[in-house]
Figure 1 (cartoon, rainbow, N blue to C red):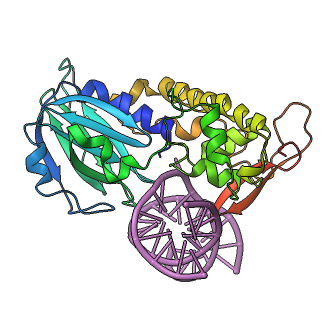
Figure 2: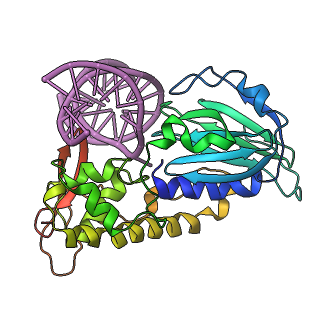
Length: 283
DNA sequence: AACATGACCTGCCAGC
DNA sequence: TGCTGGCAGGTCATGT
């Protein structure tokens, strides 16, 4: 379920249950997800206190008091849910374990964190906290779209000379970190830019215009995710992901929502993935 | 170097 | 009812 806004929403949901709490028990129910888990992961997690949670792109990082950082990626189908009662106010029971519950962390505040991932494209690793940023998976990432390093000059420079469609360029995590298929479609829709246009061929002015739009799209989604986060503790794990109404994504054949546009949303395939856009108003 | 494609997995849905 | 094919929010490794 995870592009940047969803990962951010998950991180915020986990924070009250994890930050400051000690992992009393770590159940690691299989040897790997996308890659093998690190050596003795369960032992290295057990007894560790979580100093804080961070997010980098689509990764969640849990800094531990053991000088290690737990790196988590949700892949395509990963979910992290909280059950139990971190505040200790109510009696509670944990729900029954489900298929694909690969890692389960019990915290000393009564919370249980369950990582469930049917497709197993997710990942976990343990890194030395001090050098976490230089981890192979993190060092190649471009700037955070909501941070100060993502700005007009950056995007214009990154697109320069690129012969690939702007859709693919925006999915390139080395250019900008955290966008995925949905929010790229949405950002291009709002910008009125055709996803087929070559990145290097779009005027600097239009590229610059994408910057605030990308920020807006992501922020809107975070706000929407946050609003459905109320019941996080009850842990359905459904964060209202598909409750947003997208303007382009998933709307093949439906009318374009841009004011005054009579077009409809088309679906094409670009580098093996679906792209949704309005042929009429996205140019 | 830049770019496109295949591969990794399971689950779900439409169509037959 | 059951089978089949296609599709899904990601991204790494491979080949041109």
